[in-house]
Length: 55
Image 1 (spheres, rainbow, N blue to C red):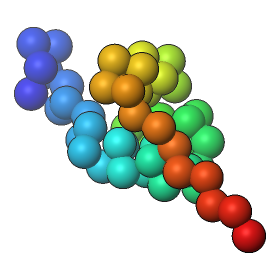
Image 2 (image 1 turned 90 degrees about the vertical axis):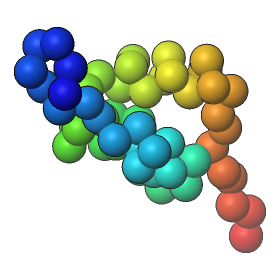
Image 3 (image 1 turned 120 degrees about the vertical axis):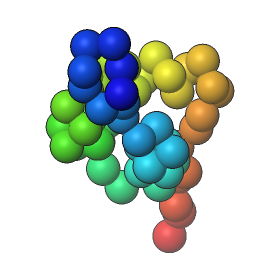
């Protein structure tokens, strides 16, 4: 838990959802009660990329 008493987000799951590229960043953020900006910031610092599937 964090200092505020909230449970820390499951960043491994969030990263997996982000890399899959199926959901929007806002759709990923909502169930974890975090902002889409938090995901974008973490992705930028970790140099994460989203997978793009071509048909």
